[in-house]
Length: 150
Image 1: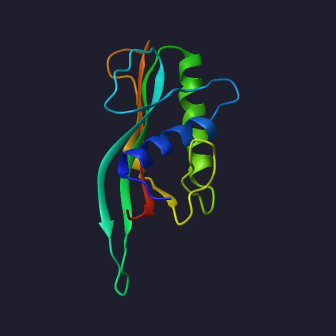
Image 2 (image 1 turned 120 degrees about the vertical axis):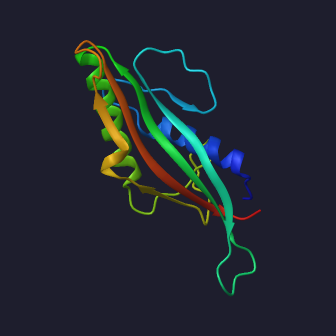
């Protein structure tokens, strides 16, 4: 199956939505740019870069998409904090699955695809800069999606 970057990005967002349903909360997954007018937290999927990587002795390379996955928004109560932490933990568990592959909308794995996450402790914060009533949530990770080059 040959995909372009836009199709792969949207497949990935739908895949996250299917696989990280929380025990208590279902956190919305949006591809940016997109207007988000919801209270609480959402999971944002943002394309940072797309490029072809050709290795020596390869005729066709692989298309790489570098994507930011963010749990972002505000926690206005303990329930909001619980939702944010549940979303972060669900993403951690799902993206650390061994040999994770990109899936189509009907959950079929795309051959020769791969999903790998990179996290840094500095990429996240749960902070209340102005008051104790609201906490800002921002948990970022970089995900590299590899698909066959078209």
